[in-house]
Image (cartoon, rainbow, N blue to C red):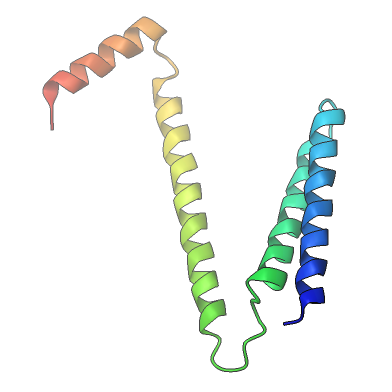
Length: 113
């Protein structure tokens, strides 16, 4: 890797960060802000992986790529599972008032395991 490779990665990362900051601070009511920020975040991830982690540049076995895809799959399973569990719990508790939720949680806590 040459120094220019790292400088290019740094400049791209800095530009993407500044663009995301500009969009978030100066256009907070625009309807496409979330979509723009997600696109910038994914682009930033790609820049980081290619320029600094050198993903895909190894000559031998693709162990680094395999490790990355395993980590990404595990992360997606954890995030999706957590959101699923939280939304399920929220759905089951919605019919309670705040006082009823507190009483229910205290009753369940007293039961123990």
